[in-house]
Length: 147
Image (cartoon, rainbow, N blue to C red; front, side):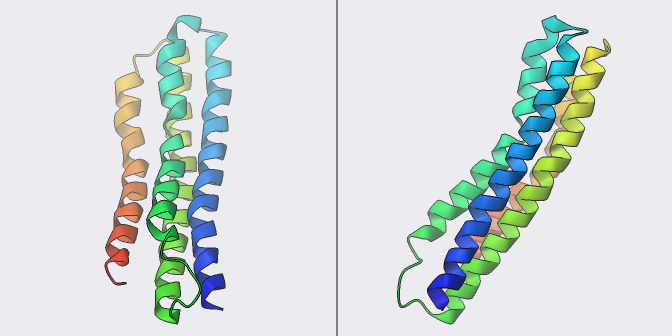
C-alpha cells in the first residue's frame, strides 16, 4: 500500500506539472500565431514569452528525479506520505502557475503584436507566478529532509 501511495505522489509531481506546462505552452503558442499576423518581426520575443510555462514541467520532473530513488518496496507509511504530499504540492502549484503564467505571457504577446514595447514588462510580470512554482520545488526538497 505504501508503494502505491508514494508512486501516486510521483505521478502527481510529473503529471500535473507537465499538463500545466503543456496547456500553458499551447496558450502562448496560440498567442504567437495571432501576433505574427500583425507584427512578424517580433516573433523572437514572442517565442521566448510563449516558452516560459515550460519551466513548471521541468520543476515537476526535477522533483520526480529527487524522490523516485526513494520509492521502493518496504518503505514506511510516513515516507510514502511525504512523497505523496510533495507530489501533490509540486503538481498542483506547477499546474496552476503554468496556466496563470501563460495568461500573463499571452497578454504580453498580444501587446507586442499591437506595437507596444511590452517584452521586458511581461518578463517581470511572468516571474510572479513562476516564483510559486519554484517555492513548491524548494518545499519538496526541504520535505525530503524529513526522510
